[in-house]
Length: 282
Image (cartoon, rainbow, N blue to C red; front, side, top):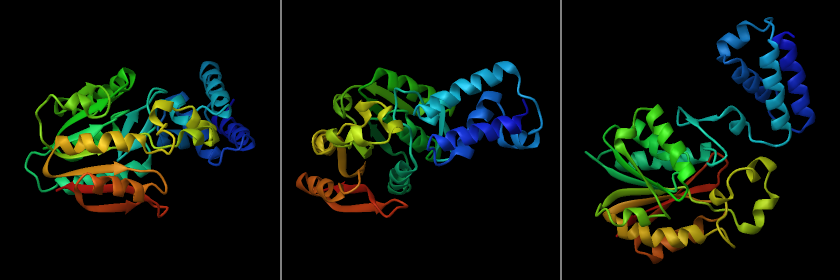
């Protein structure tokens, strides 16, 4: 069967399944099955798809129709201009989180050798992006999940920054407390979905690790644990940068203020939502 026909039929199948970006998703799945970049894909649309590739593609298509995240099927996601390996063990990196990375890069931009901690690193997207875009930075990255840390380490090695990132397993900032390091900046994208809201999320999101989603009854449990730990780990004048959920910025800002952070600022995402809260240790 010709590639163009396979693509068209798959696009229609995904459209009928309610996928908003059906045409693009069908393209990405087919390109991934074929092992082709976009240039080769579009210049060879009349080529035949061999039987083995077609069988693999149709299996992937069925997974996508059932609600498996596209990124888990193809095994990768772009973030900050870099490609990251993702698995069902990690939260899929999202564009909103790039705002947190950009905030950290601005904070440490003038520093000679900044020390940064990425707490709840997941796929390592924040830590690796920081190390890639700030060649003088040293990063310590923690996660409670050994499976997530394995993915993060693989991503660091893939981008050649593993020599400047230390990965530690444990809850929040606990693994950092024995190091005796005073950090210039701490950043985190912690779980912030209220427990009762997870089952109402899109099926694709529900298939991501609940450990990376569940923020407790009101979605703020992780911030309550993290903020006081971060204050103890930061040097005087150091910064804490947190991604937050929609409507959570006021409560998280208040929490930072209660623990002596000042000034406290926020940044909005492309939808106008206050997505990042950051403050300075007084």
